[in-house]
Length: 455
Ligand SMILES: *[C@@H]1O[C@H](CO)[C@@H](O)[C@H](O)[C@H]1NC(C)=O
Image 1 (tube, rainbow, N blue to C red):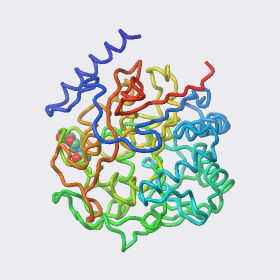
Image 2: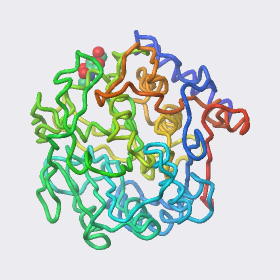
Image 3: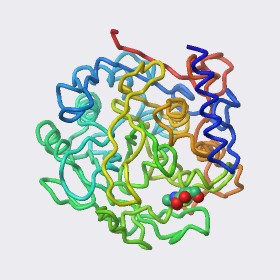
Image 4: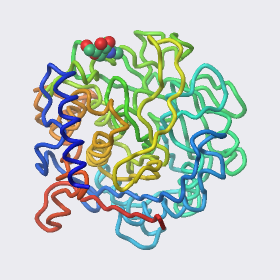
């Protein structure tokens, strides 16, 4: 196994040096275990990764991967329980949720209080493959089973009323398979998408009183971005990531996810069937293009992660990696795009199976660091290693004093502090970070891997 990873490293490195003229630090595999930034949370730097290969049984051909026979709700429920409990270290799931709210409120508001009835929670999902019209497809993204588990936790263990929960993607559409699940189990949860075109789905609106500025004067409409009303007014955010590669940004995790949340007056998107209107991040793409942006350059992802109404307002970040994939969509010349389906992951511990995973952390930089280490070690996710895909993690970990020299200040009120801890693991087969090596003196990430598979 070790030998095959050495070969894999060599292939990745050759590929990497061939396509890149810019220098990315670190190239895949080096340097390792050198934490950057400041960890925070109940267990600083902790990322929980729950795997269950038994939960995902699609044959890759028939039906949809989220059909009930191919994605086992009861197994996903057990994975979600494990994720929440292990994140806090509390075996009681109700107490675990309470700890998360108290820790958040202490850090953000200086008050050691839990969730109060009537408080609202906004949840961004990433439906990047869903546009054009309302019709189901096999694009790799969040699944109804994952959302059903999480909504069950919020209503049952936290005690939130459905009417106080908001689920949305501002630039895409909420497809029928989601509508069906919500209609059946959570009919009073608020669903918002780009059009508000079907069923009980409402159309997202920008809040004129919201404010977000990008911290680089080259960004078009630098100070004019607006956020959805219910996001600007939410008491809490839960950020729900996909687990996959991205053709421009390398990966789409907690940073890139927010591209589906921003109202940009400078642009009206209407290309290749994506009628996203002003909810369109196209003028930001060149600032996240990893094949052109070396390490130590400004990135809008840090402004989004650090904005007080976005990840900085998040109880935690969580990724649905049950059926992860290589890309957002497959296009020919930016036309003729089709959603990109999930892919088989070859490496350990996936073992030639679907990625079958849930990731969770209070620290977005830590979560994205672990997910990136996995994605760029996996042969079937090539876009994750075409450039400096971790520039935003260096910039974010050191947001108070970033390598680019940028003064990150997305609210216009206050320069950002460190957004979390970044580190690369020692290697893809042991997957150890500094807090795995030394739980007492380690300063970086602690990866808690829980494999529930029976095979
Ligand atoms: C990203 O950079 C590459 C290399 O310069 C370029 O070919 C591509 O068009 C860029 N993509 C975007 C969306 O800017």
